[in-house]
Image (cartoon, rainbow, N blue to C red):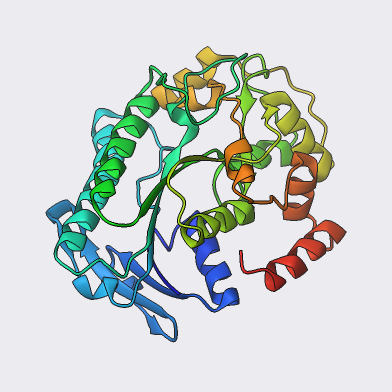
Amino acid sequence: MKILITGATGLVGGEIVRLCKEQGIAVNYLTTRKSKIVAESNFQGFYWNPNVNEIDLDCFEGVSAIINLAGASISKRWTPKYKKIVLSSRINTLRTLRFGLEKIDSSKIVSFASASAIGIYPTSMTSFYEEDEKGVDHSFLGEVVEAWEKEVDAFQNFDFSVAKIRIGLVMSANGGALPEMAKPIKYFAGAAFGSGMQWQSWIHITDLARLFLFTVKNELNGVYNGVGPNPVNNAKLLKEIAKVLQRPLILPNVPQFAMKALLGEMSYILFASQRVSSKKIEEEGFSFYYTNICKAIEGIYSKNSENKHEFDVREKKEYV
């Protein structure tokens, strides 16, 4: 099996590549930086520039599955200029991929999976969202994800499966939200945001990488939530981080107006509430390693954790 990955040098892409190497799965990857192109056994880089619809068609050689993870980070101040970058980085990459696929014989490709985000779901303290939800959040993030998924739908014209993975809060020590949440806690300055009751649907990075591989291996079609089985509220999440780091949470909750003054419109993501179901992907046969937020954070921060050792052993034995 050979997989073409966009965004392979990012947080999630790097974990997928790691699992692929462990499992003997060959990887081609696309990068906008020629300095990041390497040629190793079962790991080959190719240049592309989605801003001008440029792609090295050799990237598709021998490929049977594609995983698309490309897109600029949403964790930067949402200036008018950066908003355009966030949207175009997702739309242009998909259009360039589609342009390339139209230029080749794509009959050997059997599956395609693209990242999406749970930010499409309307913020709610009470709803429990499954993939058939039709509502879209009235926010910049909701607008971006809706346009992103519409672009993915265009791939249904090809003769391979097309899946959209709506990713939640990714738990990793190497990037994403967790280190940023942990930083103030380490210095005794941690506090919940707003009421602290907003739902945060999370997933351990290894489970997310496994979920993408499971999706392309099983040629799944449609929308799947990339979240773990047990969402938690913001206060509970911070409490568990503080517990593992052995730090107290003594400060009052941070009001929304204060974060908006500091971060601007982007602060919205700290207070949005999406309680999201993982039932659909589990019914396909996917089994999560990390189902409990406490064990997930322990596994990330405790190098000698019994749970971490157990999961590492299982990863090496299993294909996905």
